[in-house]
Image (cartoon, rainbow, N blue to C red; front, side, top):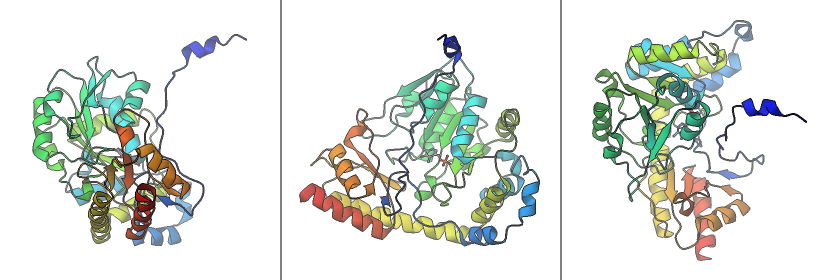
Length: 353
Ligand SMILES: *Cc1c(COP(=O)(O)O)cnc(C)c1O
């Protein structure tokens, strides 16, 4: 057989997300989902949604949701770009802004989708090692580059960097776009969002998947100066305009308007995280301080792989990667207090039993 068409295939090694087990009687602490339901108004909307609205195309710029986000963050709607999850937003941002022969920079230990997007879009990149304490060294990001991206707090480490440190990097790179992926910023860190008024090369990306309990709805957004947002919309409207469906736009807008529910939910997770840090320390785990809804912890009395496998046998899912450095750690999402207590009972048995 002549398979020469395969010579022209855009070959990529895809991103591997955490497992979504089919069983429902599991404790799922492997993909940083929020253990609480979305804001109550989302339920009300789904109960009464007028299905004749589905006859019509959605607004291509997700106007209702974009406006609600702009209002919540004190911005103009023209400073907000909405996408189908922040994965969609970041992918669009890569395509729009990382278009140079110089390498894009990101940490060697970080969100494992960045190198996948760089590969699929043929963007050259260079990774920069984290310091021994898993922090980012800003000096690494002051060389020639085609753009910069990292999460703050970083994933999967949970380590938070200050707004001053981010400003230092943004200021040093006026000739490239710096993207800060704030997927976990609501869990105690300070957002660098105010810096967008001062720097036109800063794009701040957030998501409804973690702090707003809507991973299944797929809502992400980017905030920046009007020019950055316009360039992103130009690319988006050149590929597929109607990416976000009407129901999602309306539910997302309702969720972002319920500030009290948001704050209460986030606080519950922060409290459980702090409790979990104490418990993990008692069990002999070592971990960098986390400002996210997960803890990146090394069991050190037993191998992380062994603990991962034993937890899975007990239907408790956490995340483990068979890669250098990170293979000594488990990334444990913060669930409810009850879920965490079941985890700690199992860990006690696995580690000290
Ligand atoms: C979860 C996550 C995202 C993607 O979230 P979406 O569900 O696509 O909004 C982006 N960046 C980091 C670092 C994440 O952990």
